[in-house]
Length: 148
Image (cartoon, helix red, strand yellow):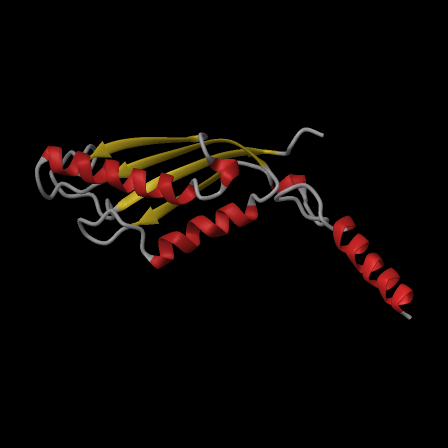
């Protein structure tokens, strides 16, 4: 009886090992989903830390691209025209940095992220009116199917 139980346990262990593939890849992996993604992360007024919606948006894109090769990521932090130019540049840089740090929790994304800060550049239209929704960072992810 012990030998039979040991055999059954070994079969379960082997079947579990057989179902494990390459890290991040699954049996239903579709390489056609490995393409460029662009999305925006929105922040509270004068804030740089990621809120729950921002973290969810990042996780969603990372989940969609799981198994893909991440070629590059560009994060452009923006800020409105409120405050000094130096403060706005710092705020936009911190926004991009917080996104980079969160994205790099996934090992396959580390070292692939370029952060840029625009500060208040473009926050005011030529006629002097403020551009809406400058509490944002724009993220572009270049992904491709992994080479086999």
